Length: 265
Image (tube, rainbow, N blue to C red; front, side, top):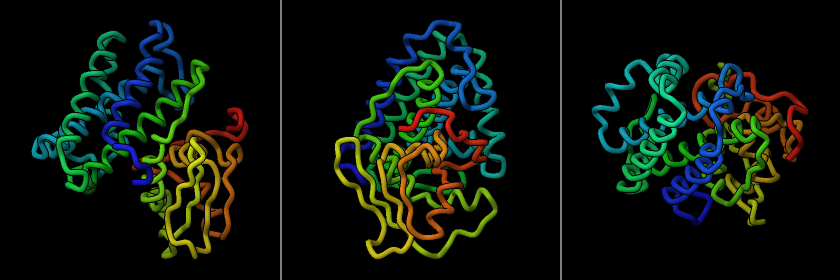
C-alpha cells in the first residue's frame, strides 16, 4: 500500500466521516439528484450499503458470495442495479441504520483476514486488503457525489493513499472497458499527498509519467472530475491518452463529469 496507515482502520474512519454528513440530511435531501445521472442521495447510500454487504460476505462466506453474485461478471451494471432495489424501498432512517451495520460487518470481516489473503470478488479474486481499498474508493467517489449535491466541503487526508495505490494498480480498467488493449509499458506516478508527502509508484525510468496532487488523481480515477479541472501533468503519449479514460472500478465508466462542472481543486 502507499500509505503507512492501516487500510482497515482507514476504511472504518472514512465510513464514519461520511456518516456524519449523511446523518444530518432531512427527508427531502435524501431525494436530491446527484451528479451521477439518475441517482439521488438515497441511491448513493443504497449503493454504499449494498457493496459493503458484498464485501462482508466475500470475506466471511465465499460460498454465499458465489451464490449472491451469480452472473455479475457478465452483467456488472445490471447486477449493481438489481442490488439497489431492497435498499431503495427502505426509509432514510432504516437505510442509514442498515448502511452502518453492513459497513461495520465488512470492516470486521475483512480485518480478521491477513492482508494478502485472497477473497472472491466480481470476475476475479483479490487480496483482502485490496478489497478494503475498493471500499475506500466507493466511499470517496459516492461521498464526493453527496458532498457536491449539498454543497458541503470535504476534508481530504492521507487516507486517500490507499485509493491512489488502487488506481495505479487498476490502470488497465480504463482500456478494457472501452474495448482497447492496454499498452505493454508501465507508467510512473508521482503524487503529492494532502500532508505534503510524496507518493511514488511505477518505475522511475518510465517514459509515461503522471504527476500532481493525489486528491486530483483520486478524482480522476473515480471519474468525479474532468481532467481539465485537475492539476495533473503528464509526460508521454500513453499517459496523456489515459487521463481521458482512467477509472479504477469495473463496469460502465458512465458519462463522467464535464469540464468546468465544478470548481477546480
